Image 1 (tube, rainbow, N blue to C red):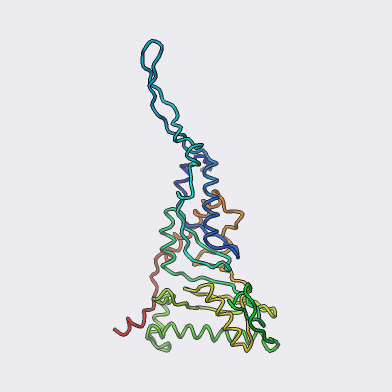
Image 2 (cartoon, rainbow, N blue to C red; image 1 turned 180 degrees about the vertical axis):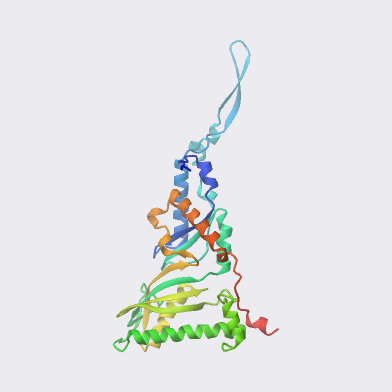
Length: 314
């Protein structure tokens, strides 16, 4: 079947519903990303063939006193009067994650009817994977590189093996915490059966949980760790780097945070800023629809979920 070039804006508008995988640059807020997407969509839609101005009926007198009925353009509906056909208020957007300004990488945006899918994806809380880079030897006020230095320490005693052991201890403590919140002994058969049912999620969506953490690269004084987590925030990741520095008998701060995966949305499929236009966004929506059809669990999770302590006490 041959592809057909569509230049009709209303037809394109009908397909502008769904999720799109974007690459958020560092130093840009999610609100700025949203404004850029809406601006580019309105610009490209208005460059297509938009609907003509409405017609109005005019009755004129002729020289022989007869009446002539004709249609003329309604100037009150002209684009020079009303402005472009597609306005920023016409487009609805919703992010499935609220990345901070310092975080870059994958972020999923729902457009128009896709806002419902973005909400379901956010409520389902799929795993997100980050590459977080820290700097050993300096501590900052906000735990990020953009704030002032508050402490310094020597790092000659720190090696990759020591960092690896610490990260393994952090992962083990979070795994124990999952089962402690559910009131199940981690060495019991019930804990095994619970783990076999899928990813264990805390009932409280404000409770950060790390499912995996490892050292990806170590170039003293820089070290990069890969984190698999849910309910995390940019501030929490910065505090984690700070605590790692303290446990290493030194200090550290975060220099970069990059999300490389959100559920099954991958970094290599995300649209860069230069590709934030109508054609690429609609193509990205088609790819996201195929991804959701292949992995419906991203929108409706059937795996196990932890219950809060107050439920266990009842």
